[in-house]
Length: 318
Image 1 (spheres, rainbow, N blue to C red):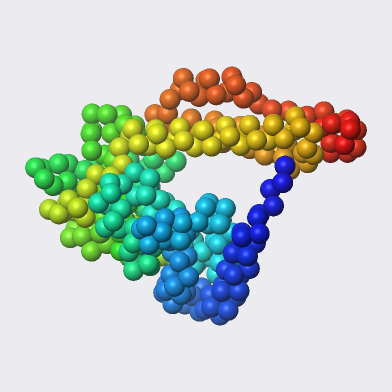
Image 2: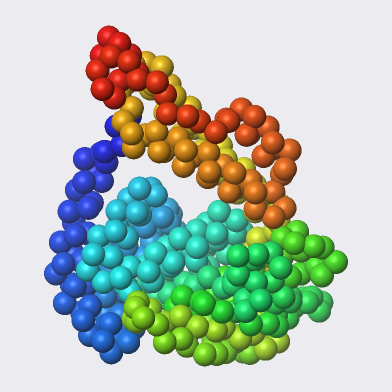
């Protein structure tokens, strides 16, 4: 199995490496030592479309794939870890949910601005009493006519205080247990009632602010800028798409093995990793347990294949 990046990805890596070395790296010492938000580095990244890596061109982004995204973050991180984590969160969990689950109006309203780097995006899920068990969150979203009113506290939020948009998860149905009663809202960074709490002192990533986000009856009349984004059904749909992707990786790996293509030890580990990924995806609270059961029956815990012929070969003829 050849996992080497294609030529276009190698060219991208070289271009981002040169940019990160020339522009971001000289700013990194001051960013870390002074706990300084790397605004200049992010502005420069935006000029190269690095703030809209996964956003399609029709919404102003670069429209690259996830391998390209990983390459970009890796190269930026070699120059400045603080800048890398901000670019990472902005491109992934802050922007991609709007692309995947947002209405067309929401996409048009937010994605171009995020892609241009006009604002930083942030993701607000974790709470003081709900970390790994995120579905037990307490932040509430109560509906009053045309308004949702959000109240609660989020914690460990990357980019807190600097973000112009937060994806905030809140409980819309208190009668539903777990993830089924949770929705996600697009909250502008300047929304009345949205406040920054404690900003934490960390041992590293000092240029990336991390802290508390407090919502004190945050409300918006204009539902175009602030409305329900993400239902539990959408989350299940997303998980199932991830499972399909995992199955495709399985199929590709075993198809190549049956054709006698050399599978090295790294690919053996990939098989194990895929199995664990499937269990993790479907083991999330509220996921389809019947689907989990059938998937694990189809894909039992794999064992390294027997070797025959030359070392590392599945086929004696190789």
